[in-house]
Image (cartoon, rainbow, N blue to C red; front, side, top):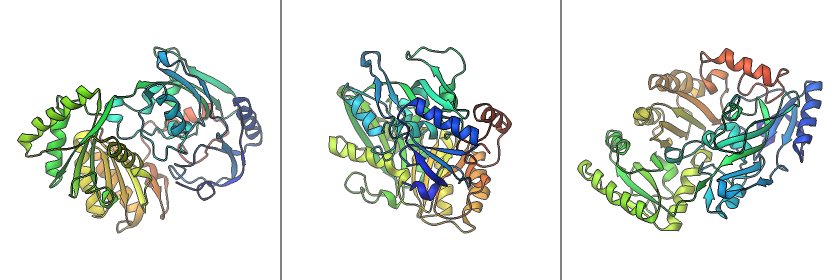
Length: 410
């Protein structure tokens, strides 16, 4: 987790208690053309370019109330500063959940999760955070409040600002309130795990999972020293492991366990199963928190799912000691480098990872870095064809460029 003072050039911090307070703060900043940095739990402040313009920190920590929770409708409306742990507890009391798997859930906020569009291992079975937002309230860079979406699942009127603001890194508006779809909590959660000898064997197993009769909620390929603490206790010994999350009713999970054992047998694999609640919970926590662990350079690579194992190989060529978690079913590779590869951060990103990701149908971005110059190309890659459109959208929401200036759309 990053310290705010180390990540952003904040000269003072305001803590509004209502959306009206947020709007007034932004109107004042707009008039003064003063930079504003929205703050949630402070867990992802290294994501994006480092801004250099001093400005106001706008903490959403006081906006943490549950506004409405008609649980029978499977919807909940909350303020954006609520922590993921608080939201999880409120929904668990009604037998429901928001399955997005965020690191540091005790301090990470819903608003921050939306700003970074973070979704973890269970995105394979449940989809991403963007899929769960059906209504949103926010304040734009002029200090003007606005709403989008509604409180029912089938709401398609107007532009889909819910999806536009998700992943905007707080550069278009300050999110104050969100209405979410809820999912029932599964009766049982378990894991099937297997050690594989090499990436070719991993690819074969992943291919089999893609056409499996089962319905996993997570398909993970993990490697590296970061997993050594739980190896032996939760995971089979080995360098490369496949971890498959299974959730549903007790009967569904039991059937999937038996089916996976049958499907993996021709591949020479015999899965081990983790079913005890404490062990299952411990492994979910390890999977959720991986990206926030110690690292000299942490990157996120998005490629076609069929190419995920290939990009794991590219990372290991650059740093054989790198720790890796690939949401392989979705084609997302998270890599923590123990040291910068030869040539430094810029060469690693611009000359190796980003070209390899493009060749595999995707992109590579920096999540955090301890050293090296974070240039725009190193962090985000070369501007895409839609870059002028993104700038035009930014101009409409934030004409004076006061919201998180320089971090994303520049």
